[in-house]
Length: 244
Image 1 (cartoon, rainbow, N blue to C red):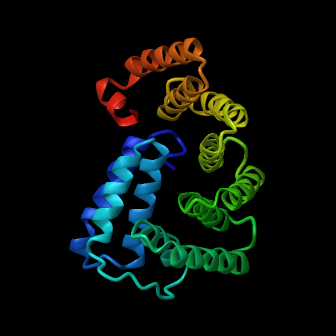
Image 2: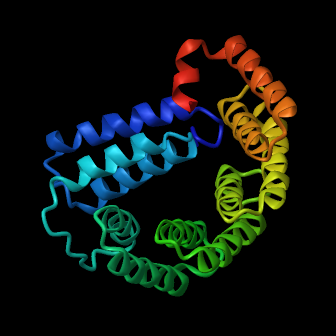
Image 3: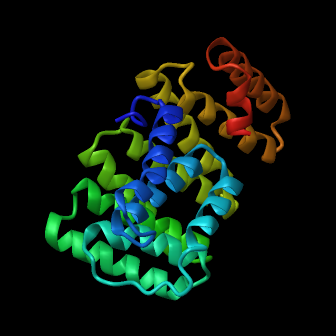
C-alpha cells in the first residue's frame, strides 16, 4: 500500500525493520517469510534504480545459505528462493523453480490473480537476467497485460511491469518502443501520484537517461533539470542519491 502511494522510503524502512526483527521472532534465514521479505525489498530497490544495492543486498542474503536447495513450502517460498538461486548463479535451477511456482499459482489461484501475475513478472526478470530476452519479453508482456486487466493501468505493479518491459526493450536496441512505454508510465504516475511523487521523479529521470542514450541530449537535459527541480521542492538532497 505504501509503494502504491509512492511512499517507497517508508516501505523500505518497514521492510528493513521486519528483516531485523526476524532474529527476535526466531526465524531462520531460509524461512519462507524471511525470503519473501528479502525478495520484496530487492524488488523495491530495483524499481528505484538502485541496481548495485540490489546485488549487494541479495549477496548478503545468500551468504547465510551455503547450498541453496529448494523445498516445497508453498507459495511464499518459491518466488523469493528462485531470486536467491538466480543471484547465486543457479540459473537453470532458478528458472525451473520459478516456472513451477507460476504453474502452481495458476492452478491454485487462477491466471489473473495478483500473486500469479507477480510470479510471471518475477519469471520475466529471471529470464532477462539469464540472457533469454525473447522469452523474457513474451513473459513480461503477459504480466503487463494481466496486471492492466486485473489491477488497472495505473496500479504500481502494472507500472513496474511497464518499466521492466521498457528496460528490456532498451537492452535489445528497441529504444523507440521503450520510450513510448516510459512516457506512458510517466504520464500515469503523474496523474495518480502527482508530478512531485518519488515514482514520477524516477520515471522522469529514466526517460531522460533513455533519451540521452538515443542522442537526444537537449530534451534529456531538460527532463533531468525538471526532475531535479521537482525533487528539491519535496524531497531534499537525500533523494537524489537514492535514485542516481
